[in-house]
Length: 415
Image (cartoon, rainbow, N blue to C red):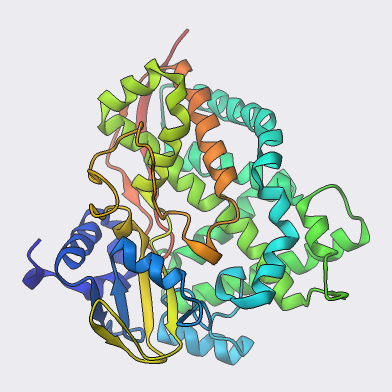
């Protein structure tokens, strides 16, 4: 795509992300010709689109120049105003991704041990059992299904909700709230715009987790939900606003990005049969394959940072108060850092992708996500004789977290 024909304003248009090839073409053109590009959509404050791997690492390594507060994602001006009126906060609910400094580190520490490699290794056997149950579900659906909606959405959701202590009966509720939260543009209706959908969803999630926290304080059990509900910082219980937001993050980000990588990973294997055959032939490749699926999909499309002091980036002057948006999908296809980035290569090593972020805000659940994807495909592929597309894939309209909303497939199992 020639830079003269690029419309960078689409980077702020959630509906455009339902056409990922178009977004990637825009990012590719900007990466090559205008890697720090000013974007001025009609419905949100202007921002600088940062599309190079090196620049994103620099920003995430410079907390005195670039802050996650007050906005960590690009947000509609109408929603900013609605959140200010309702919550007194731009984002409505300030999760860990909107924080910096000592409090951010202290809050991460509350649940960090649950997501460290040693604990994730202990979960592996249980995750394999859950994976087998979803492969059995796929068998039960006959020889075709919507792999995204029927399987991929639910497998990592069950794992993380079990870790938190949320009952299986509430899975559908949490999934629905997550989908509305991350892609409100897909749920607009007459008299209810995306801002209203988002605000309504946040209130519903807040009510759910307020009741959940109260139950875990009354009757704590052996799960993350009990640990977090009863945690103290500096001798004080975590305030309700912060605590509720923490649960929102765990229950949504804890499954949605992994779901997108599992669905997108199968899609990539179908489109690259040579890689599928290579993976089937060598079980040692399941681990690097999981990382390559994550890079290939890059479910988190961006995070935003606020410039704290006048500075320059690639010769572009950034003023205090400006917003920069870090496009991770673009960084993960930056040939200066990722060799042959347009090749889906399950044996890629090292795989230095930024799909989990970089620096102080790297994803708490990255080890869990890698393991879940690895175990799921270790379980599925040996049982699957063949699989192919059975219709047109569709994508979630979201400029924040996006992946396949539908992946119709036809398949045949062994035996």
